[in-house]
Length: 191
Image (tube, rainbow, N blue to C red; front, side, top):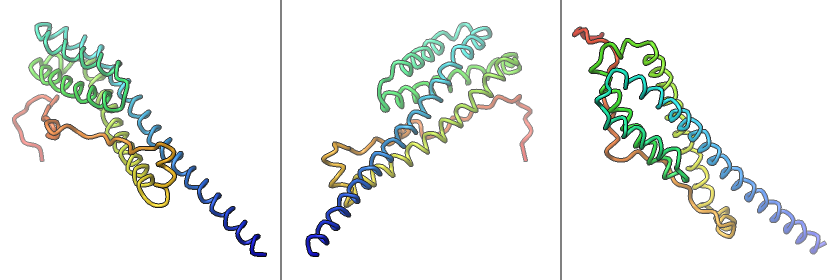
């Protein structure tokens, strides 16, 4: 009878350890999937950029430095191999696109261009999806990190070689949102 109780306890402990192992793997896959969703949106944004640049070039061909910066940031994004490299390239592209849109402010004909407006709207939608995906990714990373750093999972995660995942953070200089307006200036205040 005593050996049966010991065997039942051992089986329960093994099942509990397997349950923790499965949770670790599930949470790890969840944050990896969340990163994949960000990556898809970043690639979508990178695909929109050449069309946007060509549209702006038609009106502001002399702004070659900004176009080169956008091209470099797009190339960096396409070549990124890690979460950190992708995040850095995405931040670089956001800054370059901000400068590109600032240039567009100086060309009323461009702001009225149907192709430009369509690309701007599509890019805005992608940016919203990226923001949501980043939030989801960071939530998934928090859940994974919390799991592998708390008892009893820490005793299983360590031997599995699981380490804390990296949160996506906005660089200190990018925390302020640039104010860019694509509407015509009317001088009237909005209510």
